[in-house]
Every structure is written in C-alpha cells, then in structure tokens.
Image (cartoon, rainbow, N blue to C red; front, top):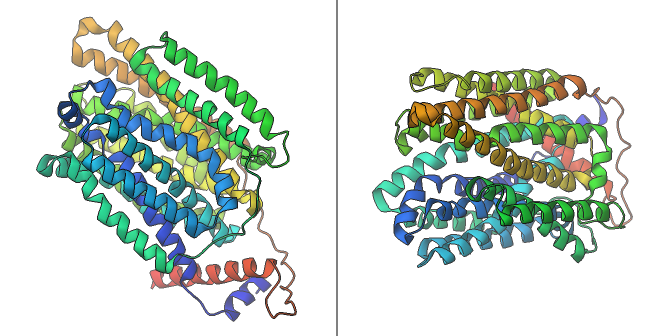
Length: 512
C-alpha cells in the first residue's frame, strides 16, 4: 500500500469535495440547458417581434459569441478570484439576464438579456473543467469527469424536448421564467455549501490582452457565424474575419512575450496537452455542424415536427449519459489510447454512414447511427481532454481548460460556417431535383465533410495518443509548521487523499 493510500485511510471521509463538484455541475447544467432551449422558440420569436429568421437566430449566435469572448479570460479569473465569488457573481448575472429575457418588451432587450446570461455561463462552464481536476488526483480524474458527464449530458438531452413542450403549452416566455427558480435554488444552496477550491494568485490584469482577446475571438466568431446568412463576400463578414485574424496574431505574440499573460499559451509547449487540444478542437469541428444539419434533415426532408425531432435525438443523449461514467473508469484503468481510437472510429464511421441519407431513409437507420455518433464522441472526448489536462501542473489547469474551450468555440464556428456554406451550394446546384431531394443532397455532402474531419482526429489519435505509465513513486510526507497547520503542499495532498477514498467508497457501494 503506497503512502497516498495510507493518508486516505487516516482521514475521515467527507463529502465536502463531492458537494462542491455537485454545486458547480448544477450551475453548468443551467448554462448548457439555456444553450439548447431556444432553437424550438425561434418561429415564436419571429412572430412575437416581427423579425426575420436571420435576425431571430442572433438569440443563439450572441450566446455563443459572448461565451467565446469570456472563455479566454476565465484562466485569469479563476487564478484571481475565489470559487465562491466567481460562482455567485456569474450565477447572479445569469439570473438577471434570464429575468430580462422573460420580460423583454423588445427584441433588443431580449438580446441584452442573452448577453448577461452568456457572460454568466461563460464562467460557469469552465469551472466544471477546472474544479474536478483540482480536487481529484490524476489517477481518479477520469472517473470524476465521467460522473460529471452524466449531469452534463442531461441538459442537451432535456433541453429541446422540455422547451418544445413548454413553448407549445405556455409560450416562449415561460421557458425563461421556469428557469429562474432553479437558478435561485442553486444560488441559495451554494451560499451555504460551496467552498473554495485551488490556490489564489495575484496575477496582473493585462488590459491590452483583454481588448485583443475580445477583438480576436469576437471577430472570428462573429465573422464565421454571420457568413452563412450574410454571404462570404459581405463586407462585414470579411472585415470581422480580418480583424479577428490580425487581433489573434497580436494576442498570441503578446501572451508569449509578457511576464503575466492573460492566457498561458505556454501550456501548448507540453506536447501531450497540445495534441489533446488539437484533437478536441478537430472533433468539435466535425460535430458542430451536426446541430444544424440533423434538424434540417429531419424536418425539411422527413417532414418531422420540432418536438418529434427532439424525441428522435433523445436515444443519443441517453447513450451519452450511460457511457460517460464508463469512459471515465476505463480511462483511469487502461489509459486513453484504445478508448479514444475506438470512440473516434465510431464517430467517423457513423458520420460517413449518415452521408448516404435521403427521403427514404428509415428512422431506425438514423437512430442507430446517431447513437453510435454520440457514443463515439463520449468515448473519445473526455479521455482525450483528461489525458491532456493531466500533463499540466495544477497552476496551469485553468489556462489549459480555457485554451481547449477556446479551440472548441472557434473550431465549431469556423467549421459550421464552411460546412453550411458547402451544403447550401450543393442544395442550390441540385434545385432541379426538387426541394426535398436537393436538401438531402446538400446534407449528404455536409455529413461527408464532417466524417473526413473526424477521420483527421482519428489519425492524430493513432499517431500521438499514448498511455501514461502509472507513477509508483510517492511524495514525501506533508510537513507541519509551528502553528500546527501543514505547509502549502499538505492541504492539496490531504484533499487528494480524501477525494480518492470518497471515490473508491462510492465505486464499491455502487457495485454492491
């Protein structure tokens, strides 16, 4: 029995760390749920405010845009402010924004509410990727993140179905009003039970970096998100992308040449983390367009309703919920290589299979390959992400998480714009075949491109993802100072030991 196991046995097992993760997950659940509930409401918003579809889609685009701007800043925020402060302020912003959306007398105020919601969610979501990593040791992080994945998968599964039912019964405003009591409940519980995680620093706030980050990621996300509606030749689209690229290059140069960067891009000098970030970005690039493609296919080609579309996508979400803890435990036991390759193979293969759909494709065919797609993502995404983060020291985890999330946001926006553009071009080229057949042709090409992108991630995983050898050496025993309190390293070791014991007990209890 090694020293870490002895420390775990010598401490009374508490639920404090598990409670912290649960509260942070509850906040992230609301943030993710809020991302998925508005799609069924777009037709209602168009009628309520007398706006076009292009204008209405900004209720979802602005959310992604603000999230993308916030994510690079979260590394600094997590280093500078305590977990409690960040959670409280971000959740209050979310609640105020939700109330404004519910009562908005105009579309402009609805957008302001969405900005406040997204600003809060932009902090809530990164906390989920950082807090479990700080609480659990590397050998238990896969299991911890897998368990967290159960909760995180419920939100996108429940969002469209719940939203469709609420909107049909009580209107789109009730969708926001219903979310407020849940958010207030989480806020109250967090006030009494949430404790701080990690060590605070006093990093210098580099204002020029914030400005550059805003123009870089805001410009890129806005430009690529607008391309599918405004067209690639539009001056606003071109100008936004150019500003984004220039600002991004300037931002990267500045982060590498100042003493206290806003975002520690030096984390990418760790090869394992760099490959992990690339794979995760490519995977999310392959799947980003799917949220647009599949609903269009189901409704415009197969003629299903929005509610039926949500129901049809539910089995994929259920598979994700089931496989999340399994993928985490497999990662902790066997490492990332095999599980990542199996997952990415299933992902690329299912996307390729979906590139052959038409108006005669059966629902069973769709459900089977959509479940395989969701399962492949679950088996690959979390293990690869955890593999990369584990290679970083604790003081770099928040920045590593911010880098990965930024890659997801930008990669998703770019790929969605490009794939939707190609899909639109193919659909237009086949217009003589009729609206249904032409739409199906465009969707087939879009899925084919997505499959090719996923195959790139698979190749990188085969070449670069390796299992890490189990560490056998143990750290020296924690030293106790004159005051009776352990030195700076001791609280971390004690937390690690207790968390490991908690997880082992929970696992044993589940097996009984």
